[in-house]
Length: 280
Ligand SMILES: [Zn+2]
Image (cartoon, rainbow, N blue to C red):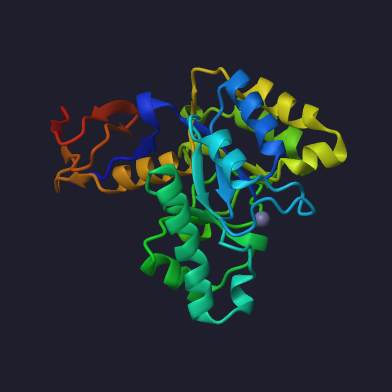
């Protein structure tokens, strides 16, 4: 039996995806939401639920401002701890309460499931990953930049490509846009460009042009999927749930989304709930 090369492709067979992750629920998020609407990018906003209206803390929004800023947008809201604690520095039961309170608030306020997260201060360890899984948190972003476009091997330790202040941002942007996964001899995996930060940094440093330049370059392209962190998590999970026959010629998609796979350099869509047969 010949094992053919198979690679996940993003929706519509795209080979690249772009996502953003911004933390803390601050007033500058309103400006960021405007830029995202102008260029058509999607972001995951990681929100605390016990720190509203603490103006000294980089202008945290109040409850109503936070709700109004995000409720009618296509962006994802995600967990960032009730009070932005160092999870490794509090007892386990307090850490769990920090996550569950945060989740209960955001879910009841916004009327949706909130099961993504970014670690406050990038602080986590194996025990924390374990209890996040028990709390049914699906993914959590770290603050460790990879400088690559790789998808995470462990979604509870999701390392981004870079922070927006990274001096390599222009070079990474160029490399992402110029990459041609289909033409690689090997390592033909799909690419994810994942940028994170805090929107108040653009106000503090008076450099909103960094975000605008990034969005102007990356957005509006046919070969890039613009998605939230949660959409990427769910798509990759759906791809990984494909069931293949032993001869690799038949594949069943038990998930609720259509999934694209490139097998032996041919692109296939496996519709939700359906089985397709691949010609020899
Ligand atoms: Zn934070």
